[in-house]
Image 1: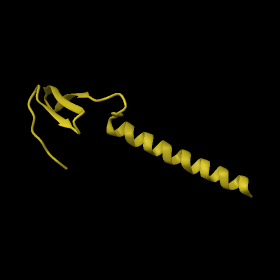
Image 2 (image 1 turned 120 degrees about the horizontal axis):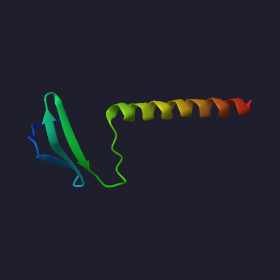
Image 3 (image 1 turned 135 degrees about the vertical axis):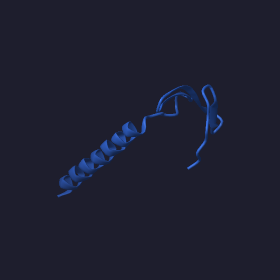
Length: 71
């Protein structure tokens, strides 16, 4: 993991097309702005984990149904 220090209005660039800017700092909260192409999905981590879990569950249901149909 790369750890960087940034001040308000400073940014980092990832892969030449994603820019993350520190918009505001209040106490222990930091507000970030993310500029990325539309084809690059951007999620909060907890939402990303929920999506991944739902996809895994869907694959398990599909696999079980497909196996049951074979027999």
